[in-house]
Picture 1: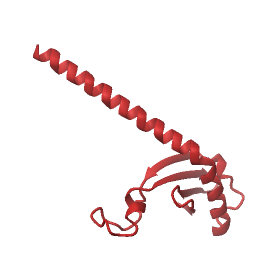
Picture 2: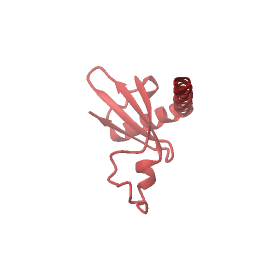
Picture 3: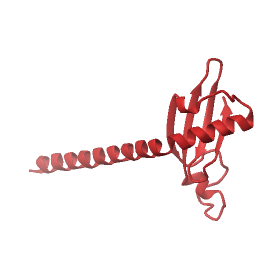
Picture 4: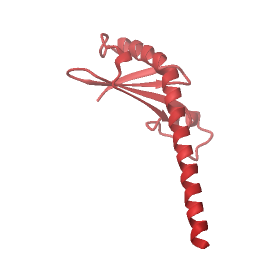
Length: 121
């Protein structure tokens, strides 16, 4: 009887975990699809302003990822009164990667602010 209950617990845990995974994946895909065009336009404007590659078309980005929080900001988790806390730990960002023949460009689109920054690595 104990093994039967253990198997039921494992199956229930697997079901809940699978449902959570698929829900999170679908949410990511919906957010990326909703903001992809805005991000591409903002990235093209930022590339022109920064004079990195004005001919690049960000609508052909090779990779688009949704990331929550901007890891490059110097804010600690316990600094709740910091003005950048939301941007560091809570705001959503889209990262677009554009592979050109001789270079690789990256664009970070802030969904909340609507701005983008382009950089090379």
